[in-house]
Image 1 (cartoon, rainbow, N blue to C red):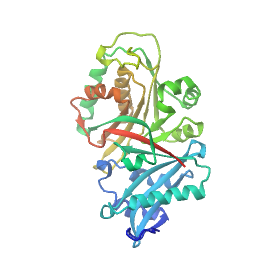
Image 2: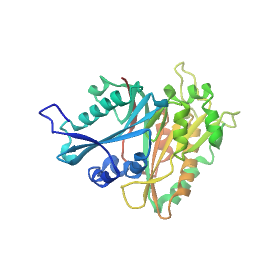
Image 3: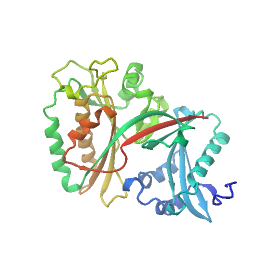
Length: 339
């Protein structure tokens, strides 16, 4: 309950299954219709690592926030924040965030840090508490049902003649666990040691990998190998020493497509990519889309959100030229605070 008499009187309660419809009623238009919460809400309620809270004013839901314990219980990732339209600008977001932090202090003293993601630059006030630890380019595109086939054909025509020096494979569970036991791979591919999947920022602690395995994510990895061709100078990343350099491998994680409120039959796909090879990024986008489209119900369209190193933005835009762009955000920012 707020102690500030200038703020509305707020009560905080755990979220329940019965609150779903009312919560959805305040969530219209979030993320331009690609809100993940309608699909994940009931599964989140069953997750023992997660806690979910509502803010209520005069017994009406006016805000929501949740956190999940990760990194073997030492970090809390805050997700899902939203405030009812008629309550925005009145400090409600700050109140529910303050309540969640107080709950962490009292109920989870083992938690040493809080992590969250934001689309775009954080405010100056937020940067007084949190430090920016990672960022990525975000490139969404829209493939309606009647454009799926032609869209994939267009992408394939642009990828077919690429000479890649790395062989792509889909990783199984044992390979994934073994993959992240190699410290060299972690250091090269994962900026700051973070694996971000669908806006969930994690370290490569084994407890997090098991969490990800439960999500049925498609893991693709391009293995280092002997060069079978060349790329143009416009495709080469430049190291801080002025010489062309690529990371040894390239990794992508694709979510199973899930329905979103944007329109009937529209599903969302997140493809998180790690590495800076311009040939690999094109191959991975195409292959992840192919797998996702096979899982779509008949007659469905897809909003695909691509996350990659900023140095690859131009390459991805060139690959997707002619496809329908979609507006969400341009950047993904990862922030962290010690507590």
